[in-house]
Image 1 (spheres, rainbow, N blue to C red):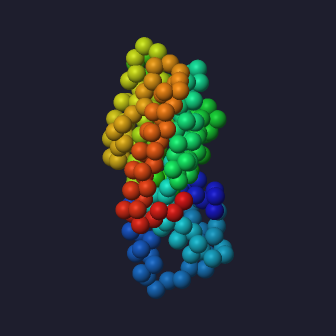
Image 2 (cartoon, rainbow, N blue to C red):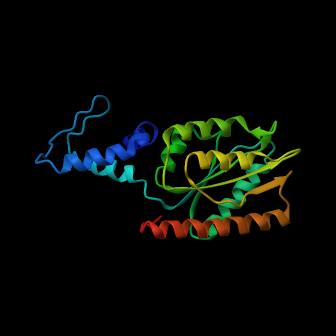
Length: 220
């Protein structure tokens, strides 16, 4: 099932609305499959309803109190921000995971994002734009069109600080809900800036909990 979940997240997520319709149509038919043999992939010989139910659940993309803090960093400033935000979210009843783009493959991140209620992306500003690995991930995610998530952005900079705004614009293009407040700091975050990040994480956690309550699926 973990492999099936990863396959769904990276290949089939784009077709989730269609999959829901097809599964509902199939379940309304007087058919009880004893085996499922897909065009490619593993054969389900035992309890094939398990994979049908899983595809239905994954397609719904119901958000949990789960946030992925996805980032890359040049000189560890953005990384320090990421961990401060993770700590703040965790302290406010959100399951938060830091995901460094140099250490996590984008396909594994998308798999983790399947049931996440929030995607928070951090990027340094490089040449008035995004860090290349962040741009790569956003392009990959755009093609899969995830739904039912809140997007937020943060980042550090030396001369200019456009990266968080560019991330939010990518989220808007995906039609995700946006947490409009950004955390954008020049150079490394000091004590006062860490206080801001704690408050940033607290506000975002509250927004996520409200969204999960609206979907009647507030579980972690």
